[in-house]
Amino acid sequence: MDKEPITVIGLKNLKSELEDLKNVQRPKIVEAIAEARSHGDLKENAEYHAAKEQQALIESRVIAINDLIARANVIDVTKIDNDGKVIFGSTVKVQDLETNKEITYKLVGQDEADISKNLIFYKSPIGKALIGKIKVK
Image (cartoon, rainbow, N blue to C red; front, side, top):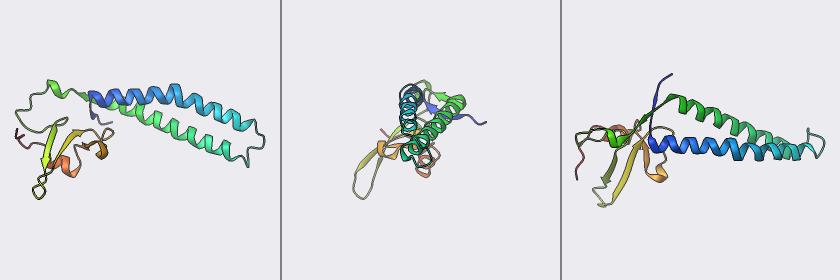
């Protein structure tokens, strides 16, 4: 079982999602299943089958998050001396040389990665290209 690097914020977000799944989503889906059961025949009850499918998705996500938390290697980037180089957790600005447009990325763990938020996986092609480069201010 390999340790997965994760930022402090990433771990906090995972724990928050886990809390929501256990304390909000689970009870809602249990209610939905009970409601669907009360409608009678389960063989042709679409609400029941949809609720059971949703329950399976929630339970699989809970298992996945518990696994991630168990394997987490929390890295507080504020306490790491990086000698001006790009490392895991670094925030970097990248400039498109053709348009001069700047984009800011943060290198994070796999589960935290979200390109819509400019969070990129440190082992992605862009992440690999940036790791070890010297930051220019």
